[in-house]
Image (cartoon, rainbow, N blue to C red):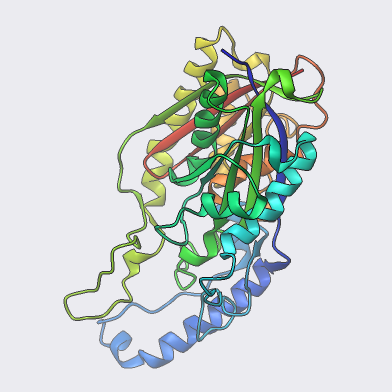
Length: 373
């Protein structure tokens, strides 16, 4: 049995930013157009008018101030309201593979590794751009990695579930080193015309090198333990899968083909599950929350993270104990906790303990307890 460690991380950040102010202007322009076009039906009570959004509403609901996206022009056009991502030719790298290449090279450099040191590529993300061939195999090919790759999807918990899979394979001797990659183009499955959620997501890609301790450079993080949990729920859902569907009347523009959630229900149901999961994981390793220097949580919503932090620690966490990045990145699905870990782990000293935890649709929860060497 080999000891698995996290030896490097990398983050690809898109060049384009949408501020809350820009987003509100675009959404309100769309709402005005909709209300004007449907004036008669609205007055007859057949259609609900679209209410305006506001910066104050977005910040109060989420804590988000901006988000990075792969294309802002289409999102901010009131007549389009979705990213305009060009169709790639079959002989071109896919957009997810392109994002992944940047994040992977950064993670490899951080770990002091090359592609020749990697045996397996796992692409773990909420929404993959195609059914097959696997994006992971494309990333493997672009990097020139021998071995194999595969895709996996556990929504916002994909990264931690991917780390568990990688750690298990390293521990068992199946691989010397594994790249876990999380390309998240969340803007592509968000309904930007829905006031309740139009501000939630951003785009990003993260990568993590998981390898055997005996080959890692000093200063890595030992993976002490991983724990995953799933419990089926429809309260977060996206029906836009690989099957081509349409409504009985032939209209394909179905609201349920984009991100949907019952936010209040999710808040009430998920948070107790996550808090209990983290406490039980720590206890199983003979640890308590007081042993932790830091928690790197899934970046979904500031209120959710504040609740979890307080529940786990039994008090309000200090900013240093639970760093947030969603004010800048918004919700980036599975990548959020890895962005937080990548940006807020360099100050750890030998022996310091932390926990990476993600949660989301499924419901799913994944946690990874790490210790700085």
